[in-house]
Length: 195
Image (cartoon, rainbow, N blue to C red; front, side, top):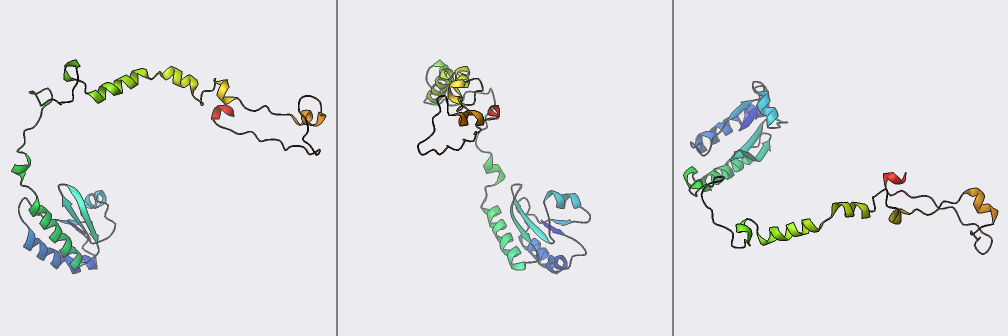
């Protein structure tokens, strides 16, 4: 797909090359070439995030696999050659749907050989996960969490000394040797509850 504008000089310059590639490589239901005029179809250009002109987008199975911006004939030829090769190597539409489909609630499908007990509904890994889930006690985990605002054992903050108490010299606080006073420690925050 090329996105162009009638007033764009580089778009006019590469248009014959694009037309030549389209005539040479077009093939029904495999490779298609399209032109989008940005002035008459701005929603298509906006949907494909076109920011420069000309822009060439190559799609495969509905997904953009390559984007080229600017009038670069050799780059465009290489990109088209890759796209044609990709389209030619793909399986035909009939081959893609040869395997039988599955329907929800439909006939029996092959059971996993690792299914254990309970009518084959749960595999060994599922049972192990269920066992772990049943052992997990959310209430107990929340009570023991370090983020629990009511848990005083792990959140115990160091007592804050007031400036008047530190200078009195009485009580249990002793001055370090040499007569120097220890600088007051700053409070640290761990959670919003500590504020």
